[in-house]
Image (tube, rainbow, N blue to C red; front, top):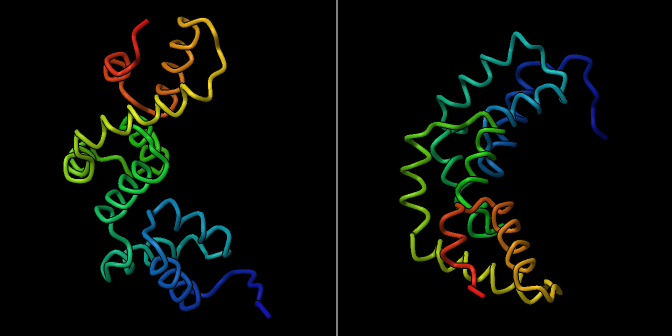
Length: 158
């Protein structure tokens, strides 16, 4: 049975945080949210985070790589939405994100993904009017985070 702590001791919090970070890549925001849920005293947060970074349980570069790779390959997000997701996690570093985009997302794959998403969505839209259909496709692709000029270039012309 789980123990409920009024204030979780440092040792127990460190043990849980190491296990939590071992499971998958995490960012500092994920851990601070966990510390709140675990009732870890705020005075211990910095010490815990420093230890996890020093022991390489917490690594911003690895987190950004995993985030970009997963959101693009699995969820088919575009670069704009991925950047916004990283900003929401308080992990945005322009140089790091640019280098990860170059290494993880090949231009050919990116354009193929745009074409595939447009083709799939075209089959699902039951709109008869070609202009309305094109507008719906355009808005859908923008919501997925793709760049406007790439969308316009790949949309079917009527």
